[in-house]
Length: 368
Length: 266
Image 1 (cartoon, rainbow over the protein chains, first blue to last red):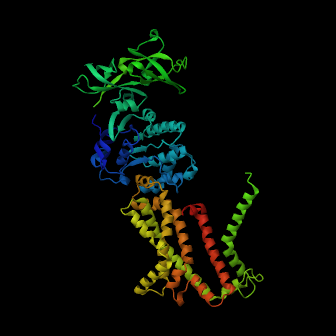
Image 2: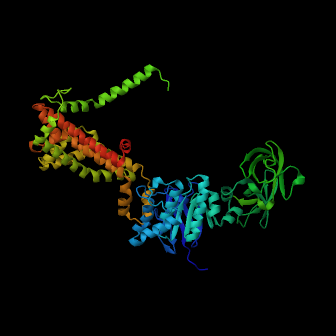
């Protein structure tokens, strides 16, 4: 494969004084794919998007669109459509005028503008509402106008800057699928920014997890979830139990560690070749991979288990989140997501039960 | 809901006093203008519109009125672009020494009118333009500019900075962004400010007094001159016309941007 990526970045840095907003960011995105940049607020994800849009210039590094550097290209000359966090629709124009604006500015043939606007209002399912002013539309309808405005000139790249963050959950999930549908229908290369891990997992072909301006992992949603490359990703995506410990021995990827007097076996995820005994490590186990059972006879497949006391029971509808305090691990709190179709609320607050997991589900990372 | 009677009484007394105090000058002038007698009194001495008829014949009052309108138009013509650009710039950009520039632009407001009036008189006298009407317009624009800047700034403060980025992202260059997006977004402030400038300039007395000569008196100065000789009810009538023009301006404002926005724009 020798295709030119639709978008790529090499060593992009943006620094304000001593603060690195974006640091050594490199990635490639193939044409037609949906990339989500996931990270907490202040992780540099929105800044990265603004660098791509051209609203800011990197101090170092280059951004390429279709293989061409865009350093010298002004934002209004880039073929990029963007949906802003607060949408930034023009309040003094109607929905249709908003959608027509990029066509006018980009000097499309005046005779074709009405048809094109109509086509895109249809695409976002707003037929007949073109004459409405922006403040006469609902939140969801405004989202759709913003999408139509970003796509109407058929840009090479679509940028989404957390436009769904302000919506209520039901509408947000509906719009996530809507973005996905439109993106697949048009096949437009898309970069989405969000702090919502669920959204990232649902809509993306590729996810970049960012923290402190640096890329933590760049992989498919499945890899990000199943095989996080460091404790930050493990903790940020999904509900994860993290333990601090020390390395004891290593055999291939199978690693023995010591966590408060207990010797545990896990799977090494760090790519360190020379590891010494006593190196400090972090071990991560996903909350849904932890099992709870009453007697040892009920243990199905857990290679590691301890006694623990239930300290919290949170009913979340389709699942229950338990929190247990484990004496053998210095009273560490372990969170467990429990899906039990037959019998909800099996375990009571204060009850002493067994908590365990499989060795291969415990991911071990070396702490630098 | 169940307030004691005394509290209610106190409250309504305050309201009535306020309303009377605020509207008294207008009501007195209106009443006096309707008198059928020959001296200006309140309550009027019989009712008639004869002093309004008399206005039609008073050429000097009409001329002065038209001059005042001209002054107001010149004032808006100057302050609209200046105040709009300054208002937008002061809000949008974190300028170096921004606070200093802001204070400097608001300076005319803090200097007593008589001070700026004399200053302007000296300047215009030096340049040798005293005796024309346009310096009066320029002067009212200068001393009232802070109002224009305030009106535009308060509109621009509510402006989402992403709007301009969105315009660029849509393919608009800097000039297009300004005319298609920035300007329409601060339009309520511009309309408010312009009408305010118009009214203030129309009413400006002190500075006009210092800058006009006998040939180019503006209406407030003309009225003042008349008062010094004989006070006739036609002065009350002309004041009512004056008030009517100001009210018309406010009605236009309400129609265009809504009085609510105007009141909020400080």
